[in-house]
Image (cartoon, helix red, strand yellow):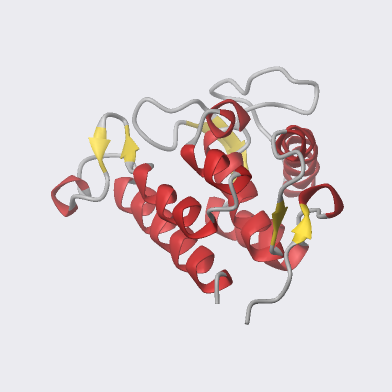
Length: 174
Protein backbone atom coordinates (compact mmCIF):
# COMPACT_ATOMS: atom_id res chain seq x y z
CA UNK A 1 0.00 0.00 0.00
CA UNK A 2 1.32 3.46 -0.92
CA UNK A 3 1.99 6.10 1.65
CA UNK A 4 -0.39 9.04 1.62
CA UNK A 5 0.22 11.99 -0.62
CA UNK A 6 0.42 15.48 0.88
CA UNK A 7 -1.47 18.55 -0.32
CA UNK A 8 0.73 20.48 -2.75
CA UNK A 9 0.09 23.68 -0.78
CA UNK A 10 1.79 22.08 2.26
CA UNK A 11 4.90 20.95 0.36
CA UNK A 12 8.08 22.79 -0.53
CA UNK A 13 11.21 21.80 -2.40
CA UNK A 14 13.61 19.72 -0.35
CA UNK A 15 17.34 20.35 -0.26
CA UNK A 16 18.22 16.67 -0.55
CA UNK A 17 15.65 15.80 -3.21
CA UNK A 18 15.76 18.94 -5.32
CA UNK A 19 18.23 21.74 -4.64
CA UNK A 20 21.42 19.69 -4.24
CA UNK A 21 20.68 17.38 -7.21
CA UNK A 22 19.70 20.41 -9.31
CA UNK A 23 22.90 22.27 -8.52
CA UNK A 24 24.84 19.09 -9.30
CA UNK A 25 23.05 18.32 -12.59
CA UNK A 26 23.19 21.91 -13.83
CA UNK A 27 26.89 22.33 -13.06
CA UNK A 28 28.28 25.74 -12.18
CA UNK A 29 29.41 28.19 -14.83
CA UNK A 30 30.82 31.57 -13.80
CA UNK A 31 30.32 33.26 -17.18
CA UNK A 32 27.02 33.06 -19.07
CA UNK A 33 26.91 30.63 -21.98
CA UNK A 34 24.37 28.90 -24.19
CA UNK A 35 24.06 25.33 -22.84
CA UNK A 36 22.25 23.70 -25.76
CA UNK A 37 21.40 24.71 -29.31
CA UNK A 38 18.66 27.37 -29.48
CA UNK A 39 18.62 27.78 -25.68
CA UNK A 40 18.81 30.97 -23.62
CA UNK A 41 22.08 32.08 -22.05
CA UNK A 42 22.54 30.63 -18.58
CA UNK A 43 24.87 31.44 -15.70
CA UNK A 44 25.56 29.91 -12.31
CA UNK A 45 23.46 26.76 -11.90
CA UNK A 46 21.41 27.08 -15.08
CA UNK A 47 19.79 30.43 -14.26
CA UNK A 48 18.31 32.21 -17.25
CA UNK A 49 17.23 35.25 -15.21
CA UNK A 50 18.85 37.39 -12.55
CA UNK A 51 17.20 37.93 -9.15
CA UNK A 52 15.65 41.20 -10.38
CA UNK A 53 13.97 39.40 -13.28
CA UNK A 54 16.24 40.64 -16.06
CA UNK A 55 17.35 37.98 -18.54
CA UNK A 56 20.89 36.63 -18.39
CA UNK A 57 23.03 37.85 -21.31
CA UNK A 58 26.13 36.28 -22.77
CA UNK A 59 29.16 37.52 -20.87
CA UNK A 60 27.31 38.04 -17.55
CA UNK A 61 29.38 36.77 -14.64
CA UNK A 62 28.59 35.35 -11.19
CA UNK A 63 30.25 33.71 -8.21
CA UNK A 64 29.22 30.40 -6.63
CA UNK A 65 27.53 32.19 -3.72
CA UNK A 66 25.63 34.62 -6.00
CA UNK A 67 24.69 31.67 -8.21
CA UNK A 68 23.08 29.92 -5.22
CA UNK A 69 21.19 33.11 -4.33
CA UNK A 70 20.04 33.38 -7.96
CA UNK A 71 18.98 29.71 -7.94
CA UNK A 72 16.95 30.15 -4.74
CA UNK A 73 15.26 33.31 -6.05
CA UNK A 74 14.30 31.58 -9.29
CA UNK A 75 13.06 28.44 -7.52
CA UNK A 76 10.97 30.45 -5.01
CA UNK A 77 9.24 32.38 -7.79
CA UNK A 78 8.56 29.27 -9.88
CA UNK A 79 7.46 27.25 -6.84
CA UNK A 80 4.71 29.74 -5.96
CA UNK A 81 3.34 29.57 -9.52
CA UNK A 82 3.66 25.75 -9.55
CA UNK A 83 1.69 25.43 -6.30
CA UNK A 84 -1.10 27.70 -7.57
CA UNK A 85 -1.35 25.58 -10.73
CA UNK A 86 -2.35 22.52 -8.69
CA UNK A 87 -5.31 23.59 -6.52
CA UNK A 88 -6.50 20.72 -4.35
CA UNK A 89 -3.88 18.31 -5.70
CA UNK A 90 -1.65 16.08 -3.59
CA UNK A 91 1.80 14.65 -4.31
CA UNK A 92 4.54 12.67 -2.63
CA UNK A 93 7.62 14.77 -1.79
CA UNK A 94 9.61 12.90 -4.47
CA UNK A 95 7.00 13.75 -7.12
CA UNK A 96 6.93 17.38 -6.02
CA UNK A 97 10.72 17.66 -6.24
CA UNK A 98 11.01 16.04 -9.66
CA UNK A 99 8.20 18.14 -11.14
CA UNK A 100 9.87 21.26 -9.71
CA UNK A 101 13.11 20.10 -11.34
CA UNK A 102 11.19 19.83 -14.63
CA UNK A 103 9.70 23.31 -14.07
CA UNK A 104 13.18 24.71 -13.46
CA UNK A 105 14.27 23.37 -16.84
CA UNK A 106 11.14 24.07 -18.92
CA UNK A 107 9.32 26.84 -17.00
CA UNK A 108 5.93 27.32 -15.42
CA UNK A 109 4.41 28.45 -18.72
CA UNK A 110 5.06 25.04 -20.21
CA UNK A 111 4.01 23.32 -16.99
CA UNK A 112 0.63 25.07 -16.98
CA UNK A 113 -0.27 23.57 -20.38
CA UNK A 114 1.40 20.19 -19.83
CA UNK A 115 -0.32 16.84 -19.76
CA UNK A 116 1.62 16.13 -16.55
CA UNK A 117 -0.31 18.89 -14.78
CA UNK A 118 -3.62 17.68 -16.20
CA UNK A 119 -2.89 14.11 -15.05
CA UNK A 120 -1.87 15.21 -11.54
CA UNK A 121 -5.06 17.27 -11.19
CA UNK A 122 -7.06 14.20 -12.27
CA UNK A 123 -5.23 11.96 -9.78
CA UNK A 124 -3.66 9.98 -12.66
CA UNK A 125 -0.17 9.84 -11.17
CA UNK A 126 1.29 7.04 -13.27
CA UNK A 127 0.11 8.76 -16.46
CA UNK A 128 1.69 12.00 -15.21
CA UNK A 129 4.99 10.13 -14.83
CA UNK A 130 4.74 8.72 -18.34
CA UNK A 131 4.02 12.20 -19.73
CA UNK A 132 7.53 13.25 -18.64
CA UNK A 133 8.87 11.20 -21.56
CA UNK A 134 7.09 13.44 -24.08
CA UNK A 135 9.67 16.15 -23.39
CA UNK A 136 12.56 14.87 -25.45
CA UNK A 137 13.34 17.70 -27.87
CA UNK A 138 16.23 20.13 -27.68
CA UNK A 139 17.28 22.51 -30.40
CA UNK A 140 14.85 20.79 -32.77
CA UNK A 141 16.42 17.35 -32.23
CA UNK A 142 14.75 14.28 -30.78
CA UNK A 143 17.05 13.57 -27.84
CA UNK A 144 15.64 10.07 -27.28
CA UNK A 145 17.35 9.05 -30.54
CA UNK A 146 21.02 8.15 -29.90
CA UNK A 147 22.01 9.36 -33.38
CA UNK A 148 21.42 12.92 -32.07
CA UNK A 149 23.68 12.55 -29.03
CA UNK A 150 26.86 13.74 -30.71
CA UNK A 151 25.49 16.83 -32.47
CA UNK A 152 26.39 19.91 -30.43
CA UNK A 153 24.64 20.81 -27.21
CA UNK A 154 23.78 18.14 -24.70
CA UNK A 155 20.96 16.20 -26.32
CA UNK A 156 21.99 12.99 -24.56
CA UNK A 157 21.89 14.83 -21.23
CA UNK A 158 18.39 16.15 -21.94
CA UNK A 159 17.12 12.62 -22.52
CA UNK A 160 18.96 10.94 -19.66
CA UNK A 161 17.61 13.63 -17.31
CA UNK A 162 14.07 12.83 -18.46
CA UNK A 163 14.67 9.10 -18.00
CA UNK A 164 15.96 9.72 -14.47
CA UNK A 165 12.92 11.86 -13.63
CA UNK A 166 10.62 9.20 -15.01
CA UNK A 167 12.33 6.45 -12.99
CA UNK A 168 12.04 8.51 -9.76
CA UNK A 169 8.41 9.26 -10.53
CA UNK A 170 7.54 5.60 -11.13
CA UNK A 171 9.40 4.62 -7.95
CA UNK A 172 7.27 7.09 -6.00
CA UNK A 173 4.16 5.21 -7.15
CA UNK A 174 5.16 2.07 -5.20
